[in-house]
Length: 180
Image (cartoon, rainbow, N blue to C red; front, side, top):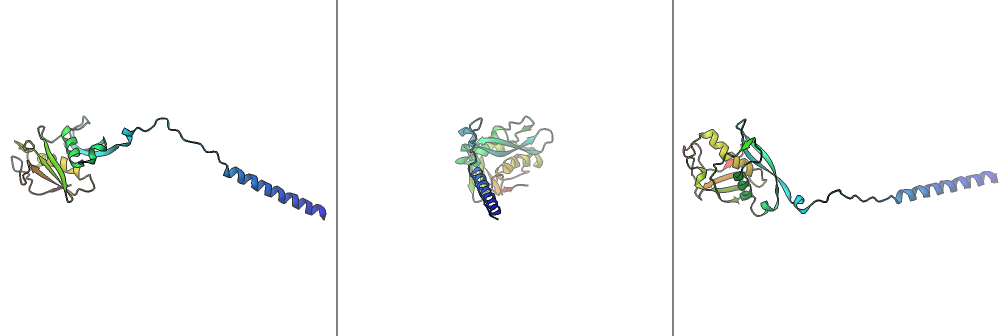
């Protein structure tokens, strides 16, 4: 009988010792530090993705162009920044700008949920393309700006004046435009 008790005590001691060893192995995990191959530069961390709308040369439809830009240029006035990027034109060779070449941005600002874009007279001067082509000019700006969550519509002014129109009067700027 003493032999069985002694054997049980030995087995229990071995079990306790095994559990203790297993617990030690689980708590002393080796910590491995991850070292990136290349550090992320400050410039890379400041980039943000914007969507600009240009005319596809093949299909003649407005198409989005995603562009990675420095977020710092969007901080003060993102509306002016986006319109200026549109005026610069696309980076993709398959796209083209529809905004008349001499157009200048006077200013752009937010009024409620409407972006107000004040452009130079060159935007409408001698533009007689018909409603379809002229709407692509307008919606290049509208679709780009309504990508921003705070904008529901875009009002276009010409040299600070409301209610102007393209030369052929096919499209006028009396009301704000919403995305179609």
